[in-house]
Amino acid sequence: MKKILYSFFIFSLTYLVACTPAKIELENGIWRGVFKTDSAIEIPFNFEIYDSAGTKQIAFLNAKERLNISEVSLVGDSVIIKTPLYETEIRAQLTGDGLTGIWTRNFPDKVQHMAFEAKPNVTWRFIKNPRAAKENISDKWSVLFRKDNGTDTTSAIGEFVQDGNNVSGTFLTDYGDYRFLQGEIDGDILSLSAYDGSSPSLFVATISEGGIIGDMYSGPSNHRDWEARRDENAMLADAYQLTRLKADSSSINFNFKDTEGKMVSLKDERYKNKVVVVQFLGSWCPNCMDETAYLSPFYKKYKDEGVEIIGLAYERYAEPERARKAVVNLIDRFNITYPVLLTGYTNKDVLKSIPALENFNAFPTTIVIDRRGKVRTIHSGFTGPATGQMYVDYTNKFEATINELLKEKI
Image (spheres, helix red, strand yellow):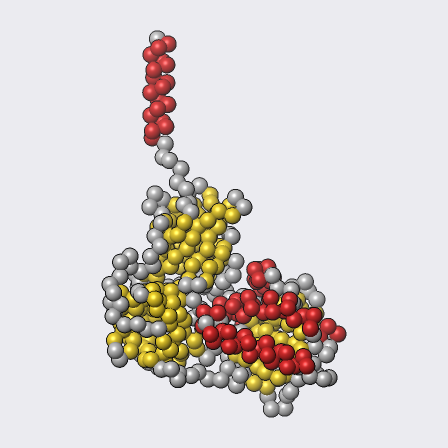
């Protein structure tokens, strides 16, 4: 009898082990993710899962950019990826094939959703084996985006670099750029995409000798037509002339609280006889993130030379504590050591809070004030690192301006 019971126990244990599903792991390496728009358009991107200090982390990969995200939670077969900025997250279930779930972005008045799925060990973005490219689009392009049957248009400059089938680049507008785009050419079809934690974006087009014609998709439902033609002389509006002081003003002033509740003003002793950079930004703004990534180390380099920076954060939340939390996340993300002040609600409040300005249109906007307290330059937008040489040219010009103002006698 004991032998029978023992045999039954061994059989039962073997059966249970055989029938217990193996634990599914979040596999390290390069993944291919896909978001699906409301119209079932697929927006692909790549990311890397890796271990750091004993925890899983993720890096979004877009051309030369690697955006590391540490907020990855694993609970059973559930994976939650939170972007510290932009109020976005991915909630997915880990299966034997990869990840399946939902992308969410929170706005003050609405919540956006997109279906999401991803598979491990996939390094290609659009097509595994694309056909030979019929054209090389490495060049400067004059671009026009159209919406609502052409009643809403935006001019831009396209800057692309092609290596075989692989393409990277961006689009520049009067108020910033589309950041790092990555993709490829399959025959005469161009595909570019990006995901940096904000809204996923996709550009698809047909290339011909006459130019490029295609579609742009971003987020769950945004769509624009676009076309481009080669143009080495393509230009945008002068970013130094878009926002200006009123005719009867030569300076600005403000009083806002920092994240600790302390009032800060340009009239404070800290800013007396200093060259001051005033940065208009929002934690929801991708181009503001590029500028902040530049200004944070810039300030550490120049603060002992007589330069100060003040960030004016215009958040999307009217609730003070919610806005403060967003700004604190921004400060922590970029290790900002200059004051970032809580001001108002997006660009609707800028002209109210800084009445000396007119025609404010873009975040970021950057004002440089000389040692006498006079406004010397106002620059709308930011030419980020995705623009290559244009980024180098802009930052060189910015620092040359700062150095010239530091030399001026008071």
